[in-house]
Amino acid sequence: MKIAFDIDDTLIVPSIATTDNGGRDTPNYETIAIYKWFQAQGHEMILWSGSGMDWAQTWGEKLGLGPFTVQKKEAEIVCQTYGRGCKDRECINHDYDIDIAFDDCDVDLAKVNVKVKRINNGISRAEWNKNKK
Image 1 (cartoon, rainbow, N blue to C red):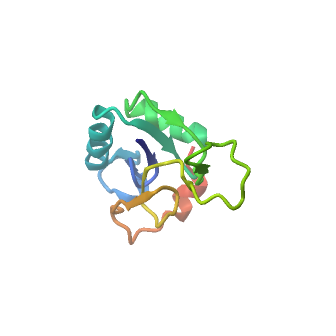
Image 2: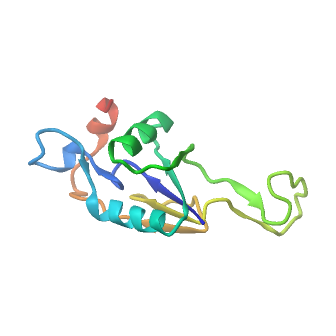
């Protein structure tokens, strides 16, 4: 199976949401444990982020999550019979390419979408999102 994980507020807790980390983003160890379980089962692991592919790559490496693939955070629909080459608009065998997606937001990116609980959700991420590097 293909299993995708978002970065921000899923695999990491933004510095704005914690008070005892010295202004650093912090690994979300509970979600990372779920990631590693799927990885140990031999599934294809995918990282993505609304902040871009470089952000996902950097955090995947920092967190030691390899091996993984980085891709754009978007749903891809693929024909289950003919693959990506299917041109039949009437074909009823189309489904999501990703099997399970983990994210902190309500998303429709996979066959199964799992919403991860945000830590300190009452704290706005707007300023953090503008300034993260």
